[in-house]
Image 1 (cartoon, rainbow, N blue to C red):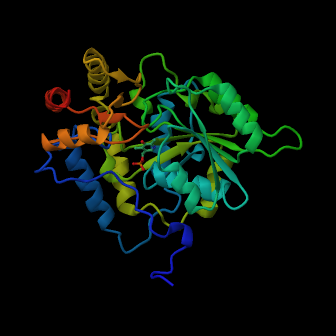
Image 2 (image 1 turned 30 degrees about the vertical axis):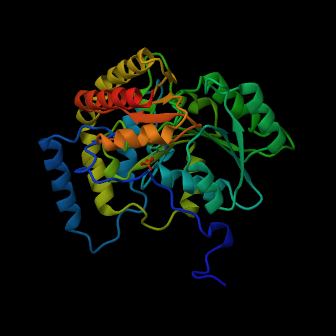
Length: 372
Ligand SMILES: *Cc1c(COP(=O)(O)O)cnc(C)c1O
């Protein structure tokens, strides 16, 4: 008998996570899709003041329903849709990863099935494993778009309780058309006698989508089984805050309240997230520049003769390389950290500052020259 006596299906598994290399050794860090721009002094000051204020009552448990924060998040989302999103439709947790784990705790579980389509976000099978949810993965088309006919066949065969759809997708950057989301919502909406499921559209990169690309938030009024998740980790430039959230029917938020741990959002998190939200225009102020830099990077990579997936996110997936690990290592040796992820032969680079992208491009040219 080996020690510790962990569940056998977890034995020997490496914890998930991109390599975190010291920034003094690898100064250009373009591997986890962070926003490269930190907050202004005014924003830092307000966040610090909010944390100090929360500290005064740290002897007390925080507001379990985090009403002020839910109201602020609802009002932020309302700016993106035609109708209004209200606080009862919003739920939050320590990163959208925790939101999605809670969704699987409430809507997945033993005897239930979750479905996604590869390449997809690598955390989804982990939420399924951790909640004992049966995991089924279909596939995307060769250009990484969703093959709706195939997706509907997978859904018909497995009757999933939860469908997980990242849009824009990680690691490919591909956004989904609303027609596909609608079709999948209807496919699991429960015709008489068949099981019902929810569709989770993970819009972690939603704010980076190209002009004219819609958000699934627009479908909330017409689809009760739709959940749209967002995060403050990417466009919002607050990955260190750990604040993710969702918008859905209030009944879905109520269901999650059954599985959440009591007081899961600390008083400090609630206070600092609220302060950050008050600086939303500033924190989101670099999104347009990052989108332009992304489009430039896609064009530049194509000019090098590489394949690049169309991207609505703050990263691009490019390739293909016979030995992608050698390319990744060659870049690390030149002080540039990107991500070895996605289908065989592909690599993913996050969009940084113009200086960081110049360093990436110079290093990649050298590595490719050396390898040819
Ligand atoms: C980065 C990312 C998230 C966000 O995770 P947080 O827990 O909110 O930091 C969610 N989904 C996808 C697909 C991501 O790439």
